[in-house]
Length: 196
Image (cartoon, rainbow, N blue to C red; front, side):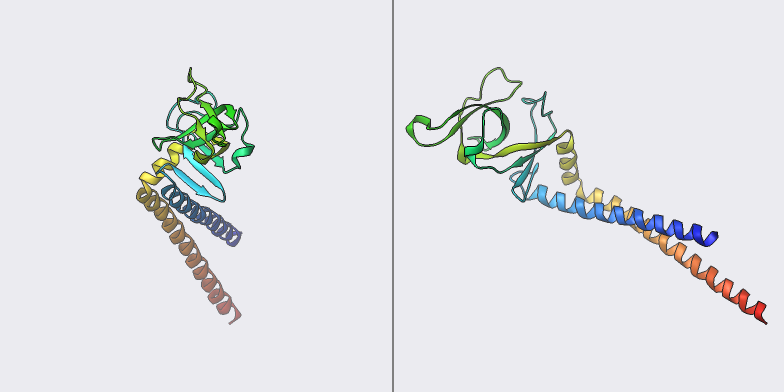
């Protein structure tokens, strides 16, 4: 019974330490992606980008501080009603809704999008050209943009904390293993004495 309890504790510790270990790896990857994006608040992988929403211009549907996951698409597939993330003339990254499309803007052959934040009373002053579109919003995760920014800004604290937990769990596993080994030796010695 005691051996089963000890095994159960070891198994539980192993599961917890594995979860924390993989969490550290995931955090490392996310932080690396965040720092490799166009800004400290973005990441990009497999045709998807992530951006933190910094204003409340889309608040009803995409609250400030959310992480938007944006898919790179062909500009020709973008439709009225799509929420797109684009680079404005001043290099700011904006997520707004497409409210109209001009297929041949001023006879230039270029496709242009009129956008507007759903909380704004007026459309954006500038048209968005296809070359400036990063992609279409596919997923929104409220507050996650704030979380990723905090992790990126406090990566040393996060790693120290998670590393400390892994060390404690690893030490506990070794302690339980040593206790099991000592009990096995004591049991063998006891059995050996009884044989004589």
